[in-house]
Image 1 (cartoon, rainbow, N blue to C red):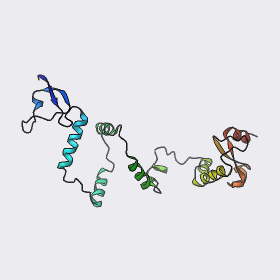
Image 2 (cartoon, rainbow, N blue to C red; image 1 turned 135 degrees about the horizontal axis):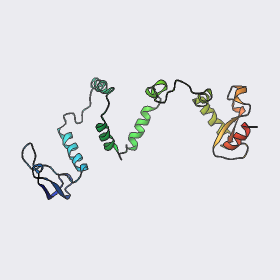
Image 3 (cartoon, rainbow, N blue to C red; image 1 turned 60 degrees about the vertical axis):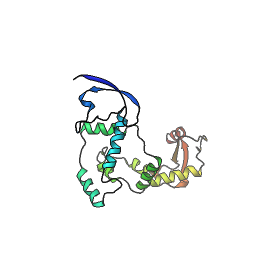
Image 4 (cartoon, one colour; image 1 turned 180 degrees about the vertical axis):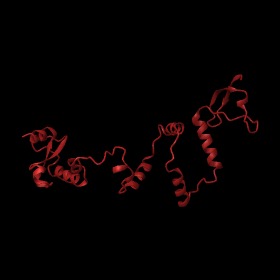
Length: 199
């Protein structure tokens, strides 16, 4: 097929550009009228998005809860093909959600832990082999106690006065006292903490 070059205007933004293609693709297959030409894929996507929104009977309307549940059931377990996945990634690349959108999502998630990825459902699950020490120091109670101790001692190491990389140290070791009393806790920097542990 013979290729031709034409100097034409973009049907979306109006910029002048050189269109290259064969003679047949200049005309619409449907009605024989000149086909739309766009200077880049972004203009083409914008044009089609606007056209679809104008012709969309659901424009400005919302699905009922029943329909939403049906769509959710329909898409459950559905996997995208590599080609669909690639297109989705390309479409989302470089896009950022607005600050307002991010804040709304954050508010919606407060107090709602995602149980779908907790425990046995997590990809990193290895049969519940977390050590006792990890369980002890990863819970909310310890985090609150630790913060209280740091505030009490003005975020300062009680040996050298350092204010960075602070740990909270048990004066009487936890293996003996088995509790986190604030009177038994002091903040120490990493190096001082190591020295104390090895005394």
